[in-house]
Length: 311
Image 1 (cartoon, rainbow, N blue to C red):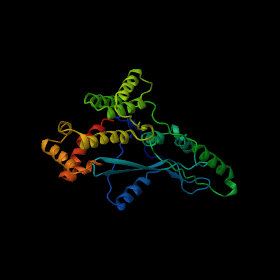
Image 2: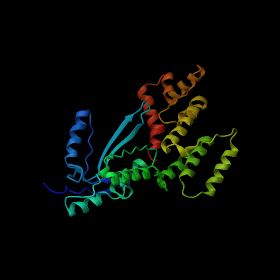
Image 3: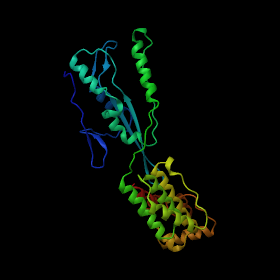
Image 4: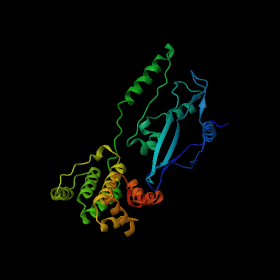
């Protein structure tokens, strides 16, 4: 057998994501599917005898599980689980060549390919748990102390948000805000302008002045939504849905028909539902005025999901 498996190379895709060249993603339907793929992948991991272990890992291992879930609203939500097994740290390697290769694999995590692969996942609302494996044996007390000191240091790592948001996303927020403003909807316009300001590298005086003018013109005080602690998609989705619900409960026939997939007949049903004391607290409440489940999902896709896709 070869001393080393073929090296994996990383590249940046057209969308800016870091990918492993030649990597294959497979959809699984059962634990048996997962087990077969996992065992196959483990066979390619480098191992070797070392001072204290008969089989010591010579390379990092990264297991990435992507879970997709489609909600009733039609939106697909994605979660990621990363299980990382770092290479074993043994002072003595069988050969000088292997020792040099092992040291390259064991460079600091923030400078390693592993960190590049995880960049998209750890920069937002991720939660991390680090498990440090140590030995109580007195002969390895030095290694044990080093491992604990390293683990203690990692506790203080702060994952910073990206310093600059994609320009296209900011432009899309501003375009939506301008559209709301033109239609006389100051509240969602102001909320979207605020989201845009959170993403700018430097304050924009013209935008600040525009926001102040909008706030001053509103008949009732506007409660500011703190979007700095919420994911951007979730905050903008909330803004869009609140405007839609306000239109359902108070909008004119013309305002209702301005919504995607709402024609004259559906708008009339919504207005009739109001007369029958139907109060809309969720887009799903459209089912209470005669719309089917597929129609509600379609409405959500056109009026919310489609507008979030450019962020």
